[in-house]
Image (cartoon, rainbow, N blue to C red; front, side, top):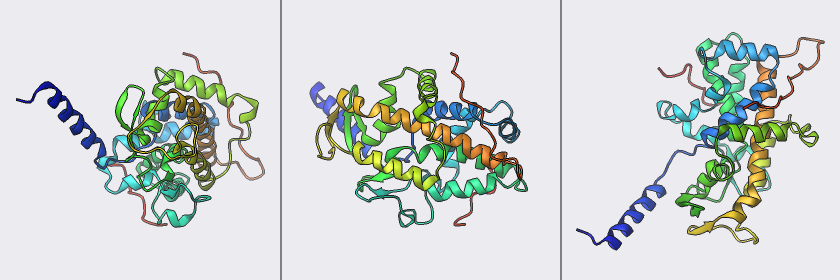
Length: 300
């Protein structure tokens, strides 16, 4: 039998080894995806809202749909690469050569084409809708774009507040939000508040490549040790200073994702009639408490 100190060390090493194993690169935590989708849903036109309701399963909200791609990832072989694009963190901007024809940018474009095609089978469009919601959000996660040959921070082992064994990618997926908000409702409240600010009015618009450029710019700072120009190394301890620097960035990225997702869905599901101009999205109210084709249908 191991002595207690040795046993504790063995457990710690085992945990560290498990964390270091390759894992799917999922972006944002459940609360983040759902809160951003709730913001998007509040800004849909009546036509787009009706189309979403028609495509999704009965009782399934846009927030429910936002986590589908992660929850069913193992049922769709090869889909892990659809969630990210590895752009070197020292690159000036996103470029198609980093996509290799199969990344979050190209897949988002592919699923948008399916979603906007009224002649496509309903099951195919339903799956496309779920992926469009999720991938618009994923491309706004800085470490799903910026990369330092470490799988978007997945192999940079750090401690963050009470999380003694985590990695930089997980800090951005959920750690920063978890240390600021208690639940999905609080996250959503923060996103709705930011979306109402006059300075946020110009955020909608652009395309996936532009959003990837923004995430890359944020990733350049996410990789730095607070107060210095030195990159974060494995074994670093991150805490309140890192939290204070980046919480506003996380909230802003999720807010932009929600606002832009609503525009994407309004355009793809309820395009303006000829001569009618651009459809007007419903303002966000205050929240009261041809590469590889996409799969033809959702797995059973």
